[in-house]
Amino acid sequence: MIDIRLVRDDTEAVTAALARRGVDPAEVVRLAALDVAARAAVGERDEVRATVKVLSKQVGEARRAGDTALAERVADDSRAAGNRERELNAVAEGAQDAVRQALLYLPNLPSPDAPDGAGESDNVVARTWPEADPAYTEAQRVPHWDIGVELGLLDMERGAKLSGSMFPLYRGFGARLVRALTSFALDSHSDEFEEVRPPTMVLTATMVSTGHLPKFEEEAYHLERDDLWAIPTAEVPLTSMWRGDVMEESDLPLKLTAGTACFRREAGAAGRDTRGLLRVHEFDKVELFAYSTPDQAPALLESMVARAEALLRQLGLQYRVLDLCTADIGNSAARTFDLEVYSPGVDQWLEVSSVSWCTDYQARRANIRYRPESGGSPQFVHTLNGSALAWARIWAALVENGRRADGSVVLPEVLAPYLRGQTVIPAAG
RNA sequence: GGAAGGGUGGCAGAGCGGACUAAUGCGCACGCCUCGAAAGCGUGUGAGGUGAAAGCCUCCGGGGGUUCGAAUCCCCCCCCUUCCGCCA
Image (cartoon, rainbow, N blue to C red; front, side, top):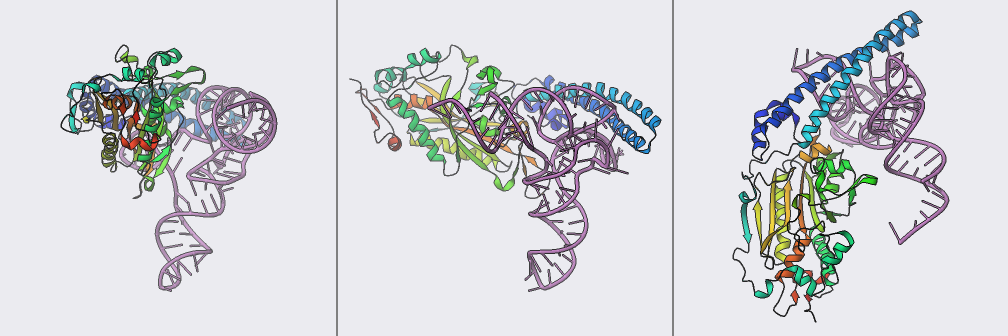
């Protein structure tokens, strides 16, 4: 969440910043008013509370002095004050809760560097690699769902039989390829990023910390019986590893990488991209994550984008980097770069990575701070996350890009060590 | 799933209804001592809210309750340790 003090002291600036991403100024003004009311209510309650404390102390003193009559009389006063305190407390807590709720629903302030925009079409293409479009052959113009069936790599029908539509089931070489991609990415990142294998089901508090709850409840799978949530990204558990903690500045930046399954209900996208792997409820992904000081964050953001790009280059896929405009940046982020891969079979740019700088938005929600080396009180850390990469769409792009005239598929040489040396998926028959 | 014991400041650990304003130790910071250091001695050391400040308030795993007053008593929940059961 954003800093309530900023809302209080400079409502104008917050209103203006959030307006860039389409938040109604009235919402901010309403929050500022709630804050004023809450502080007044808390002040009033605290005053009465102090009275209760003083009076009860006097009861104890009178008791010890043996003055029972005085003790009783003061106890009566204290009881009356106590009742008043209860009433005021209810008011104060209600007011504070209203502020907290409003704050939880408000998105992060966009970075001044993020381009303005009203929608997807206003995202800025920062670069494309390679710049010149490769010459695609007719053999590459076959969608991956057809290739998957032809070569026995992907069985969406049986996936649907088990779990409903949009739950892919990979087979044979197709299954091995998913596993290879995860290993390849984790090995690539473990020079600087500690490998983590977190739980994939988490508590409500863990989902709230990243901003996935309460606003986006519809997007997540929930196991009601145990009140657990299936993670939509490893960013969720990784952010909560240090939830509620005070870190040492010398520990920062703290960099983590994790390969997990990710679960998304895709509630808002029903009926779109229903074929193949373009949009699925469960997919594997390797995530990069970092806790940092505010100063370290910009360089980290760049290096995480660079890492995702490096993997795409090694995989030989054409990609472009989008600097997301204010309308398209995720709720918790201040700045986001998306990476899209071109896939000739479906003739589309597919989003395969999203790298975000969340400033202190998540750290406030999760109460993660660090002790500055220069002394002074603990400060909120910054969090950054990025996919490197999401495999369902990469899988599709690799299979479509690698298809040859005889129907076989060639995979990039970098994967050879993870595919028992076999980088050609033989043609059917 | 059953039984027992526990969860207190950066850490260890006391406190079990009224000076808890949380003892004590360790650690840390500063000072004295020293050529310098160690040791020793002294002083100081949590987080947050609100306020111009003095101050006031909150926090002893979480939530609820009893009481004039709760770290302390009661109820529910979570987590940890040990033992038993079950299990990939």
